[in-house]
Every structure is written in structure tokens, then in C-alpha cells.
Amino acid sequence: MKIDFKELAKEYKTPLYIYDFDEMSKRYLELKEAFEGEKSLIAYAVKSNSNLSVIQKFGKLGSGADCVSIGEVLRARRAGIEAYKIIFSGVGKSNEEIAQALKEGILMINLESEAEMYRVEEVAKGLGIEARISIRVNPNVDPKTHPYISTGLHENKFGVEINMAKRMYIYAKNSNWLDPIGVHFHIGSQLTDILPIKEASQIVSDLVRSLLAIGVEIRFFDVGGGLGVVYKDEEPIPVEDYAKAIISSIRGLDLTIVCEPGRYLTANAGWLLAKVLYEKQNGSKRFVIVDTAMNDLLRPSLYKAYHKIEILNDEKDNEDSTLSDIVGPICESGDWLAKDLLLPPTKSGDLILIHSAGAYGFTMASNYNTRGRPAEIACEDGKCRLIRERESFEDMIRLEQRYLEE
Ligand SMILES: *Cc1c(COP(=O)(O)O)cnc(C)c1O
Image (cartoon, rainbow, N blue to C red; front, side):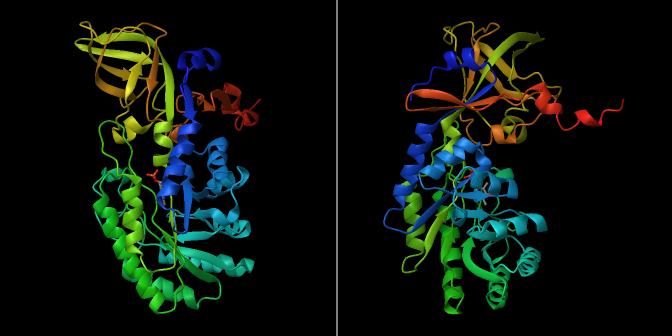
């Protein structure tokens, strides 16, 4: 839908996160349709955008949830996602988290190490609840993405080697407290090359064939998330090609395909709206200082990530445009949102629109420098509404206040 950003800034102030729910739905349905004719479950990766209303939106479309902490599992439950559609992943889960996940009755716990398997078995035994599990295997393929977000090589902390996974499946099959029902891989994020996905899918489907042959009844083929999106000039993988690659690798097997997209569903359905405070010139360097910062949107500082930024004033790029950095008010040199951008002159109060901020935006936000996190807005069917209030000073000190000494 056409969103009136100026009006939203007037009504809700800045900085402000804004999400297009129609766009999120469209992307979900396109992906779901790509798997038509197969048994499939899309488990939305909650960590990309965990606002309850966002999770609820996907839940209403039939989505499950991929969670990496018990907090995310509880968010998904609170937003109405059925327990049998929830997967709990992550390299380190505490006993309490495992116990709570078992009590919730989620679809499966995704194991990332042998030690974790024994831990889950022990907790399951203590509760008298059999734990449905999958194992995250590391197929050792290079996803050709940013090193910080690549996870499918042995040098990464994620998953277990194929041979180790086989031993674990045999152990789990013979355990009274473990029920191995799934296999999982997730080779990285922001994938734009289909070959590593094909390769990984083939390696893992071969593992499934060998497991089925020895009586380990795998039913869920979980291909993780990681579908890339356009931030600048990337060429994303068409979802039809993605689905075809996966479907063809498991031909002849009776499996439910699970996929866990996060960024693909949310990144380009969200913006961060902010305001210019003033400009500053240090020698030859021009800075545009804005009212949002790395505490609101960490990706530029953390990954040197590119976000398209638009100035919403009437001046178009003109002969007065010069190179400028866009920076926030935080006391860190790493606090920048864009570097060396060709910008026309701006004035105090001009709005700036940061694109592709729907994923790993608000969820990575913090209170650094005691800055309240932004409000969040959902736009849908021609209307916009508040889905999270702006954090106030009182919100930020609530858990400390009563410990002040007299
Ligand atoms: C982060 C993550 C995802 C989602 O990744 P995107 O790149 O946002 O699609 C899915 N599954 C697992 C296990 C993850 O850790």
C-alpha cells in the first residue's frame, strides 16, 4: 500500500519503525505457493522481527515459527501460533528452556551438538515427556555470503558433521526419551546463489536416505532460512527455483518440507523513519546528523550493511549535492547509517527514510545511551496502526528504580 510517511511522522514522532503487512502477506503466500503440491510448513524465523502483531499476522496465514530462545517460543505462543508448528533451534539452550519447550509440546527441538542431545534426553526423562528432535547438520558448503552470516562451514559454531549426526540419530532412535523426526540445515543468511543450497540439500537428503534405510523415521526435511533479498543491487533467488531445487533433492521420499524464512518475509516490508537534526562539516567531511542511531538499527555498524536511504524533502539531487555520511547521536565512531552518500543540502526537520529495515532492525535495537526504542507501526488495507509504543524513560529504568539507596 502507499504509505504517507510524513503523516506518520507527524502523528507518532520519529524515529519510527513502519511495516507493510500487505507486503509481508504477499511474500509469505508466494513462498507457500512455490511449494504447492508438496507437504510443507513455513516456520517464520521470529528473530528477524518479533513484534507480536507481526508473528500473529504470519500465524493467521498458517505459518509456524522458528525460534532460537524460549522467549521467542513464548512470543510465538502468545501471538497464537500452534505449539505443533513451533521449532526451537539455537546452539545453546539451558535446562529451563528445554523443559519449558517440552511442556509447551512444540513440534521439535533442533539439536546442535551431542552434548545438547544428552541434555535434552535427561530433561525429557525428568519430566516424563518424550522429546521430538531434529539434528542440525553442517553440510560443509560455502554459502558465498558475508562471513558473519555464513553458518554452513565446519569452521562455524553451528550444526554437527554428517558422520556425527548419524551416530546421534542412532543413539536417539534407541533412547526412550528422544524421538528423532527431523533433519535440519541452515547454511547462512542473505543467500543469493542457488548452487550451495542445491548442494547442501542433496548432501542432507542423502543422509535422510541412509537414515531411513536403518529405520530412523525422518519425517521433516528442514531447509532453514537464509533466502536473500535486495538491499542494493543483489539478484535474489526466485522462490520457484529455490523450491524446485529442494523438491527435486527429496524426490521419492515422504517428507514434509520445513522452511524458516526471516529476512525474506520482513526485510523489504519495513522502514525506519527518522529526522535530520542538523548538518556539520569537519574539514572536508560532511555529516548529516539524524535522530536515529546504531541503537535503533545496528546492521550498518555490525556488518557494514548497506541500507538505501531517501531524504523526503522536495530538493532532488542537484549541483549542490555532495558526499556525506549520515550519523546518529551515539558516542561511538561506529555509529553511522550511511557513508559517502551523494546528498543535496538538508535542513533541520527533513525526514529520512531508511529502507529494508523490517528484518533485524527493531529486534537488534538496544537502550544504549539510554535511548528509548522506537515505536512500531503496521500498515494494512489502507490503514496504519500502532503495534508497539515508544519506550519511555520510565520504561527504561523500571527494573532499577527500586534499588536506589535512600
Ligand atoms: C537466523 C535463522 C533463520 C532465518 O534467517 P533469515 O536469513 O532471516 O532467513 C532461520 N533458521 C535458523 C536456524 C536461523 O538461525
